[in-house]
Image (cartoon, rainbow, N blue to C red; front, side, top):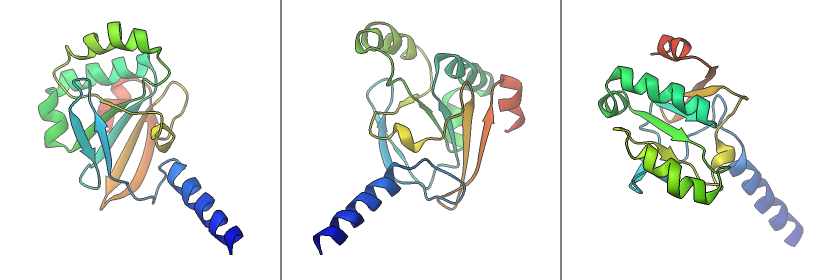
Length: 151
C-alpha cells in the first residue's frame, strides 16, 4: 500500500515537472514581472514567447517594440516569459532588473520551480501556441524575421 502511494506521488511529480509539449494542458501559473506585479498564465493565453538567454530576450524585445509594445501582447493574448534563474542575484538586482524596468511591456520572470516546464532549444526562442487550454504547437526561431513570420 505504501509503495503504491509513493509511486503515485513520484509519478505525479514527474508529470508536473515535464516540459510543455504538443497536446499538454497549460497549467495555471502566477508569475511576477520585472516590476514584481503578478500575472496569471493560464488557458486564456494564446501564445507564450519564452527566452532562456540574453540574446533571445533582445530579439523578443526588438520584436515587441516593433509591434506596439504592451498593447501587442495584450491584444493577442501573448505572454512573454524569460528565464533569468541562471543569473547571479547581485547582477539581477543591480543591473538586469533596472534595465528591464525601462521596457514598456511586462516580462514575466520564471522561477526555478517552473523553469523545466518550458521547452528550450539552445540559442532559440520558443513559441508555444495554445488552443483551448492545450499546447497545439511548439516552434523554435532565432531571428526577428523568423519571429515576425509567426505573427
